[in-house]
Length: 295
Image 1 (spheres, rainbow, N blue to C red):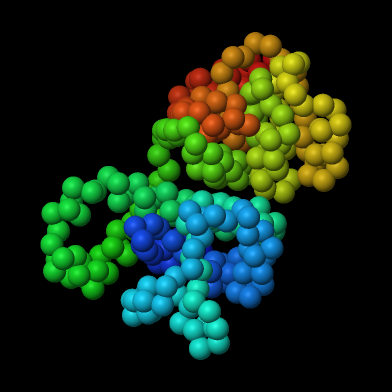
Image 2 (cartoon, rainbow, N blue to C red):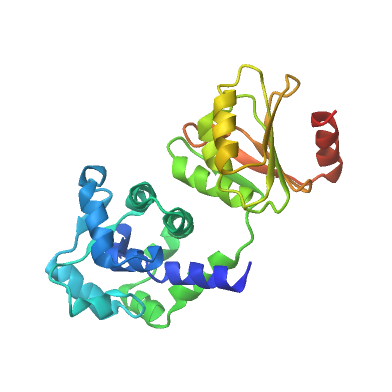
């Protein structure tokens, strides 16, 4: 992992707080990460307030804010506090997912994926260690926090290599989307997707690839993807070729002829129902897949 990417992940981990038993991030911290002013950020949210129910966003009480300020070291809220006329808003994981649709910028999309990834890592860590935390007394927990051991734990999570297998349950749509985009961004030359049920939602994922990377999409003749859809994609992003085949049932995503993933659901449906993504490591299988798909 590149140093600047790890630095960003560490920064995000340090900006996630537990308030009302929920993982949240402050509006000012999110604005900083999205590279906009806090005022502009909140105005965009207010224009789309119907998209942010209480489970997505809520305003801190005075007591909550004062308690948070006493703990904050890295947050931008300290520098903002003197000029703020209102208590800050905080956003949950679902709220962050919605922000990328509201702010509509490349930075917002990229950063939302990073933030959601951090939320997921932290949530899984906490869920997997509930028994351990239950056995730690309040005194021990304070000592643990003062020693910044939590920070070191979460930083170590950011350094972990991507797991070979990922299981997503129904409703984990954004988690699945974030992982698929991360895989697609690994490509430097070519992406090969074998998926019989593609549509424009599939293209919305594939367009996140790096500039100049070619996409070869193999799908059935009944796929809901028209020549007009393909033309519109190529007019803006280029390098997409669609091939009609009928010899595959399962979905495969191949990156630069060396990384291969077996995907249990069509990309457009990822997360709508429970499914898994598994990395195929057998070089012979990858080679045979490439031979069959291009024969």
